Image (cartoon, rainbow, N blue to C red):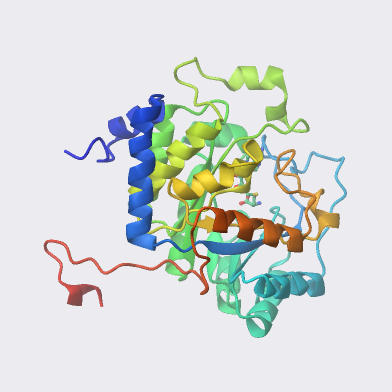
Length: 365
Ligand code: SAH
């Protein structure tokens, strides 16, 4: 037997419910071992550019939802985005993640194509897009323009909960889009929030098994953080969502590490970030602990500080005031403190050759 690391639904749920520190130590060690053996010690840095907060969606948890009229809306001019990409390279980040709200009207297909083309022509970085549910045609244009990867979290695999927190949306569209992305040749990333009101242990077990089934290339998991200017930031709404104690997953730091570690064991070769949301819960050690419990990626923020406060998807995001340069120094120090090297290439998913029973080396080449 392998100490419960065979990831059945029951075992996953058992780990998620485990609160014994000495038993959890085994989970952290196993995740760290699997990470080292499959993706090595290098930590890849992905510079995040939150280039627009325009959004037409009403996601119940998100601070930039369309109903939040307190926010001034922006879209960064192309030259400013390019300047961020050049900054990224100068800080040694080999990937730029372009993230924004979901707004086909304000964040036009052609504009994004132009941004991607210019970055790929002028700066030697990989480009990841994270622009929500866009059409297969748009995804294809961006791939042709040179985009390498796409992040689209499923947020939860629970169909009913998904529709409740994303009014008018169906989670199955996201599954379809993940398949489209794969067919278009993108590296495909997804993920969930942990501790959404209404989210059960069983549903997180399903999420993790979903990641494994889809053999996703990147997995982002972070705690749900209530934003006061959203429905899920209001107690009377949350009360209607919460499950009974014992069923409801708490949005805690420890729960996030458990999910992160289990994701690593489920998808050994995936790139998994230690997220900003985690650093927000524990500014002193959150990022480092994530990296020691399965993660191998960090996403420092490159968004110019003047825009950053307008992109508060959740409140008190870690490092919201640091400039991109200060952020870069801080991240390097933190990575050095845990004795891991920084990746120097684009940090693509490395697909390992499988040479187990029934497969020969030649079959995969
Ligand atoms: N519009 C894009 C990008 C969304 S922001 C999209 O829909 O894909 C990226 C991620 O931030 C989301 O996928 C969500 O998981 C996370 N997020 C949003 N609001 C949050 C909150 N209140 N707490 C924690 N994470 C949140």
